[in-house]
Length: 320
Ligand SMILES: Cc1cc2nc3c(=O)[nH]c(=O)nc-3n(C[C@H](O)[C@H](O)[C@H](O)COP(=O)(O)OP(=O)(O)OC[C@H]3O[C@@H](n4cnc5c(N)ncnc54)[C@H](O)[C@@H]3O)c2cc1C
Image (cartoon, rainbow, N blue to C red; front, top):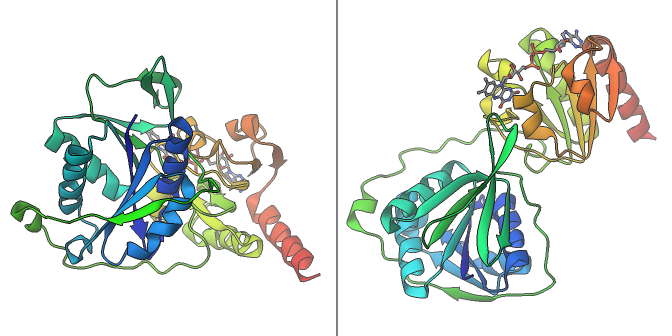
């Protein structure tokens, strides 16, 4: 396999999900090349090279400053054609979903998306894709090359290989039609602490909190633990918390060491986004709530009583 892994960058760092995909690709075969596309990203090449790539190609050009898909499709299409990659892998994100779809159209290639595993079987690449609200896993393949795949976010952990990679700049030629879309404005959401994708501890809130103001309870506990706040779709849809915090089938997939679910019933669509967490703790007043079926520790009780006490205990413990 000649595999190209697209490594996305954000605020001067390679995105963790992309590095996880790179690590997985390196485990599958030794001919793995990573590509960075951006402006001022040359310095990231060495860092990316620690995750198992034999080579890191860097497309560094002002035309790639904005996170827009078409200029990236131009770069990737030329690389696939000139270097003969038979497989192109992406860690899923808003940007890469567009880049992968654009590249599939440009190269007339097959794209499998939302994969949660990849393996080589009898010399063929096979992907695993959850279906029917994540209740079954399908084996998926490709009829032709190049094979394109988007991997569900948070699926693979980045693992340093102990090796280094050759870093090389590649020319950037952007087609005229790719310059038609321009970025008019970028807004930066102010947030404290780690993002839910990177956090080792997540405190998540659901409808059991009763009202949006009560999210201060989960925020207080998350802060005491140095973690991030997540939410269910029910509260995101109700406008209590931003979509960026939603965990589950139509939100993010997370895998922290500790996941504390406060007032969350544990619907299958929520479970699929957090079931790979190390330790799951649930606080729910209903002893029959489905979340207790897959929690390591369950507390039957009222979040309004338990969460403040727990926060106090954590703060006191940390202060000693
Ligand atoms: C196609 C599709 C995609 C979906 N995608 C997602 C997704 O990505 N993420 C997601 O989360 N959901 C998703 N859902 C919605 C999902 O089915 C559930 O409706 C949702 O997860 C429920 O959220 P909740 O647990 O906050 O609310 P509820 O199901 O209403 O549960 C609230 C819980 O709080 C408990 N409670 C109430 N008061 C208290 C209290 N004072 N103290 C302690 N416990 C209390 C209750 O016993 C209950 O168990 C999706 C649904 C569909 C159909």
